[in-house]
Length: 328
Image (cartoon, rainbow, N blue to C red; front, side, top):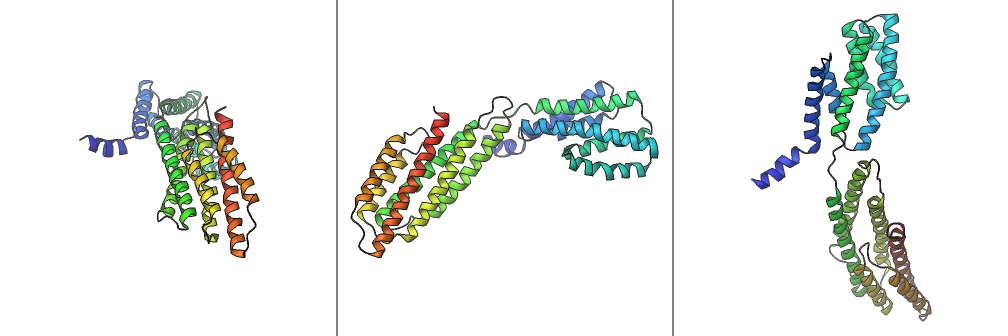
């Protein structure tokens, strides 16, 4: 029973579905309670005001307000000259739609159109009627926005995704180190790279949702974390390409492989990279003092290993930049 509840009930009856149903009921009930005409329209406005994020909800509410003011003014003007005819409504749509697109208030097009049909039904305009339309709009938008203030946090999902990204990064680095030692590539290489890329993108989406749902206390840390990991993913793909040019397992390869293993042990965002940066500098100096290669193959191999070492420097510095920004 618990499995059914988690897999079926929670999957299809999430917070947005429940809020939409509640918004439709409350808006219609309150419109009827206050004896508003065309109360069902308030229910429809409340339904379409339920958005994926709080930021979206506020942005769309502003667009709808602007669209209704512009659209209703236009329709009243056209009705005064052409009367309450079908052709009036057609001309209104012909003029109003391009205006919505031009002023970037397209989210208010349908709401304004519905309110305009009320004028056609009444075939008259009065102050009490205009107030009724205004109250319908305010009621629908208010109910939708108030219910949309509740948004479940994605913090646990984000933390789990971060851990998954870090574990996958560690596995890839260990595989790279082993590949340097034995001149072979892990059978799971392609799978792990795809997993890292998709997990980073999933984390970015979750973080963006949380960011858009924070109206006053916005923080970029989670977004920047996944941007960091995406940057490191690109560095790893360049390192991956280097293996196509490696022909010889040399003592230099073993030294760099041991260094990469140390980096993998310090992959978490809390890990201290400063000792690794110091060791990297020592390795670079050691590398430059090695005897010159004697053959073309050795020269190309050495150049590729040096490139790997440079990529690791960027890999480490990218995390230090993040730590300096957020860890103080």
